[in-house]
Length: 273
Image (cartoon, rainbow, N blue to C red; front, side, top):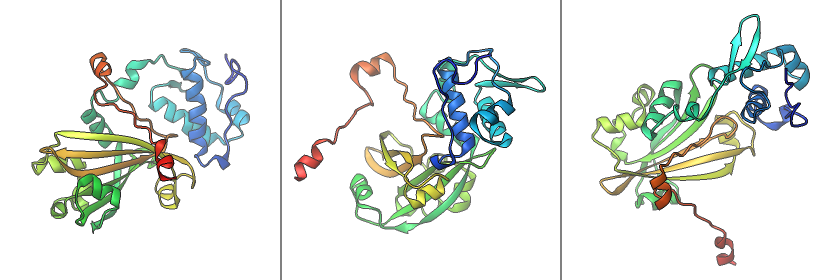
């Protein structure tokens, strides 16, 4: 049996000071070893006690990390025998959502939502400029949690026309996803512009995502157009230790760079100096 880290030197370490739950750190270490082939399909993972000793964590932490690996199809747990690496490949990733809308539906199925803020107020300047309005807007902040564990996965912050306040109530937002509520009211997007950026967690978002202040976060901004006009702005904030952003394109789309642009802001500082 291959020991974790045996092929490539010292295995990754886990630490309570890292700002990421210990079970998630252990999950990421084992996930990385499997992805790099250090642990091959059919290999047995070290025993729970060995992992406890190797990483200095409790048996509860080890069991939760193994449960997450099993849930994502990386390992198979055999009662009374141990945990074994399953064969997996690109199909396992792409099947999680072969389209943008299917991905939203899958997220809705796997998570539950908490409505943190709901009301009409003035948006920040960046949102006002994106939506081309200086009026007050309906503001909704939600936290999506993994349905099984309650672990926070992402915080969504959306700004919409205030006329939707009677429709997008807290009970409605708990019952159905936003895109479904909008569709039921005849609001169907014809274009969505995505922007992916990175930032560090401030006190509020760190608390909502159950991570450390200053931890790295990913932000996905979506500007949604209806009938060719900016309609609403949605921002999803997530931790890279729990989530990834996947982009699938055909060969034709790659050839014409359709839907993907990388913008560089390196000249901004120089222009201000």
